[in-house]
Amino acid sequence: MERIEYQKATAMPAQFPEFRDRTVLVTGGGSGIGAAIVEGFARQGAKVSFIDIAEAAGRELAERLSQETMHPVSFHHADLRDIEAIRRTVDSVIASSGPIRVLVNNAAWDDRHEFDAVTEAYWDNNQAVNLKHVFFTSQAVVPPMRVAGGGAIINMSSIAFKLNMGGFPAYAAAKAAVVGLTKSLAGRLGPENIRVNCILPGMVVTERQMQHWLTEESIARSVEDQCLKIALKPDAIVGPCLFLASDCAAGMTAQSLIVDGGVL
Image (cartoon, rainbow, N blue to C red; front, side):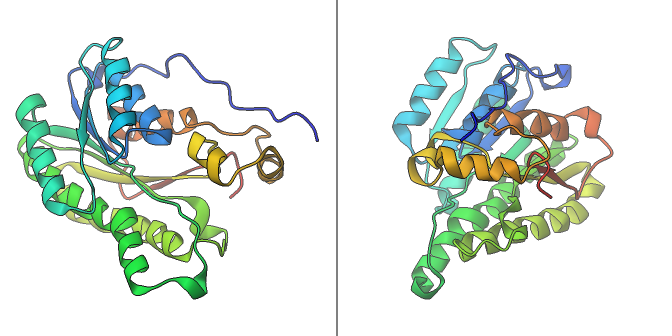
């Protein structure tokens, strides 16, 4: 097998001065793509808070970044299936950092599951982890975002639902729904200067993926399907996320941005 070429990490993406002192909230920010997004905004000078259910990893990330960034990074331990916990956390972030101007709905759970084995309880839990919180976190941040004059919401979908992948039907359904929700929220919130877009990552090599599903062989096969013959790391999603949240994308809403190395 040929040696796999991995995306080269950049020390710092493009600079967006508008993020300086701006309040940003990221869900599922304790690891993987979410952690890369948290770091990306924090290094732009934003006041970043993130929510994660994994307490140890969340605290470690916040402590490490807070030593290196303009503002301390704030970790909030919460279960996003608990809607009241979301609302309390949003209130806490606003009280400490001001109105949230950027929300990144990143949290998800791509657990593999067999079609014949899915129960009603499993389905409902899967949708709560992958879809339900996207709506309710957005609902919680919008009132102060309106008062502040507008903002940006970036939802994380996936190309998985476009590839006829049979190993996670509940997850694929939720990720397809995120695209529809994005477009509906964009139509509702656009008149209030709130933009809503989504990102559809392809195969991104994270620690979780390597622990559970990816191997060097499977990564190599996926890279063969890409135009770019490199394996993407979480950093690959940071630049597109910063762009969609920035003033450079002031005319963009209701859009789905695919970041997959050229599979689709």
